[in-house]
Image (cartoon, rainbow, N blue to C red; front, side, top):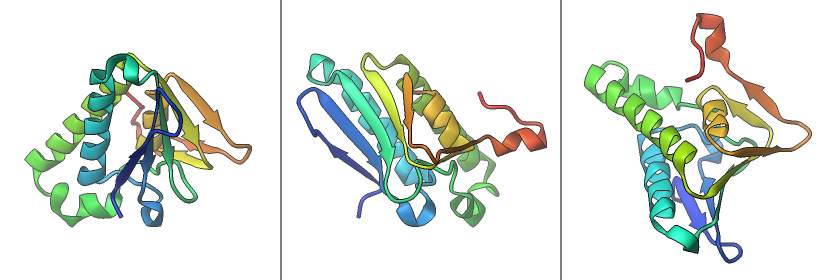
Length: 144
């Protein structure tokens, strides 16, 4: 199973599915890089892709950063942590400047960095049981 699946359900629409349901689609380095690459490829596709849909598999859109992955050594390595933060910022900026209409299809949870991911999209479509949250606010952090 890949961390990100890409399909074209109808002409001119590219659907990117975060595919880590066991981790509530939390973003580790591999998943974030795949998302960044896919958004870059969509932007380069020109008129072939007019709408980009980002969604999560399973019971969540995205729970933000994968804290277990970060704790596995990324946080202890300042350079690795900064590369991850830079990649996250670059991915969100790519989404914000994409020539396509970018939709976040939110199923239940969009938390922390997952909420920021949704905010980087042009539109959010959420089910009735959505759960948005920026838990860093409790620690004095604010979304970018």
